[in-house]
Image (cartoon, rainbow, N blue to C red; front, side, top):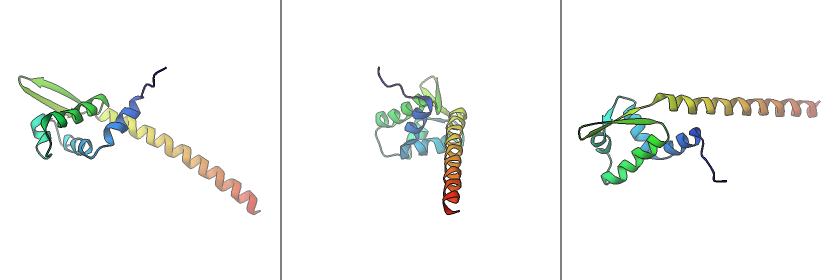
Length: 109
């Protein structure tokens, strides 16, 4: 059976690159065209658009084409989904650490 990545895994994969993180930061200020997003980076446009495709596949951005201009906007729901996952992980580890602390306290007595 082939491995299927989950939405949260796709989000973290998309966020796992400095270029894509910078694009997310830029889009947090509002929608932008591909050329506006690519401007600060010294890479070929086809290479840059691959980053945009990864962000879109991760559900972090969506795009709309009007004429010859493609505009990207942030999808905050994906960020919220990753925050929920991180919160769940933190709760699990807090519980585990509390259990360890309780166990160590019983050993000390």
